[in-house]
Image (cartoon, rainbow, N blue to C red; front, top):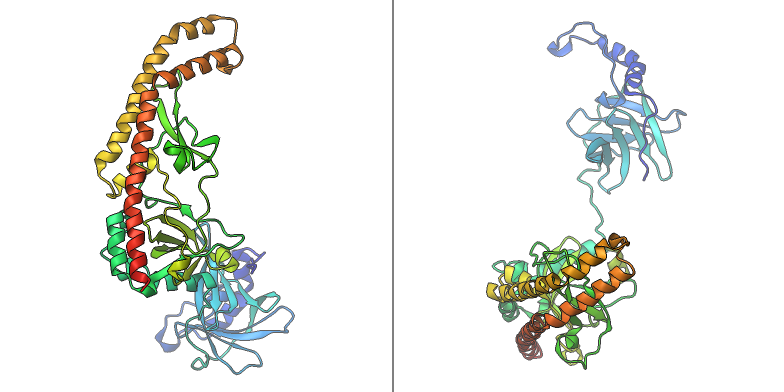
Length: 441
């Protein structure tokens, strides 16, 4: 709905109403009120009760605010309707108030400058007072606006009501990252708390979020988190889980780091029908925890729900549940975040950071050996800053030397991450089996 804005300045609007105030001045002194015979211009909005009409006189109404509430009676209608003011702000600035009927219809708009607008089905009509009016009687249509809830709001309330945080307030947001706490939630869960993820065309897939958004792990800049290699589950090591370890190093950098690069094809979409629990609902985002302890953010906003509810009550028959452990990959960032959330011992994250430090120490030693080659090239007739031609070839040669000579650190990180994933997956598999045995009854 567009908002009518008066083209007249506030001063001009008040001056045009000066005759109204003058007429009111004739009653000065009644009821013991002081009288100074000063004519005070007023705006349309400052009149406490009056009749208003459109410029063409086709529509009119009485607006009464003498009793502390807005009451209106449209010409030709006996109903006296109570209106509720609702602020209209833009960029934090108050522009006016919508005056809303009990059936949640915006009937009038009172601007901050005192202008009054009538909304019809198609039009926004400026109103001005043409005559005084008697106070209206009690409202025949009263009450606050009854707002029709959107589908996503209804779904959000229904899911929040069966969420872990509501049913078991002792558990925190961070506990959804902790497999021991997830096990506790599953043991306490009742069948009516089970839900399942539903995939619908047009909806964004759930995102893997091992920890709450305010719990962040150690992250490094400079390197890439993506690999050109295609994911092949038959490969050994971290590649089985969808990633490779790649060391990043630069001759002038004091921070050379190891990165877990995600391979093409990871992550696969969460399987349709995956069962789990709603841990909590944050606005339009559902924190969905699978029966194997996977933690996801699922968009349940208006557009997503219109395409089809991404979270559906009931887990379905256990015989139709997708295989567990659909996503297991973690790197230094994820593990240190889990440690920060209290889901794993702090030492686990610290040990990974120590391996990264080993890589950096090793890389610094290799780049010191490269210093003479680099200095000679810098003094040659080339622009070193462009990093092209001979400069690029030299850097790639020494980068490969770093990767070769410091392979012990990168291999150590890969082994540690694979061990972490496999140990955690054993716990997750146990969670899933226990849940299946319990809820299959």
